[in-house]
Image (cartoon, rainbow, N blue to C red):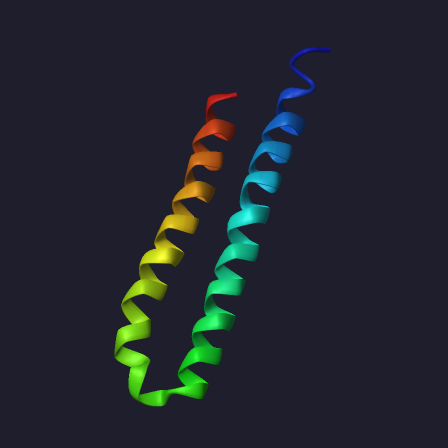
Length: 71
């Protein structure tokens, strides 16, 4: 019984762990595009912080993947 639930636990861990970062990256991209649309000259200044924020959000998804593998 216990071994039958391990795949379900892994699926839940990675599924919920990817939900937040997925929404976060979507919001980061949307706000960056909105800011660039309002001020196209600031695209260079917006790009680097946007990429850093997306990288940090993806790191959370990688942590969830590591936890899923360790279950």
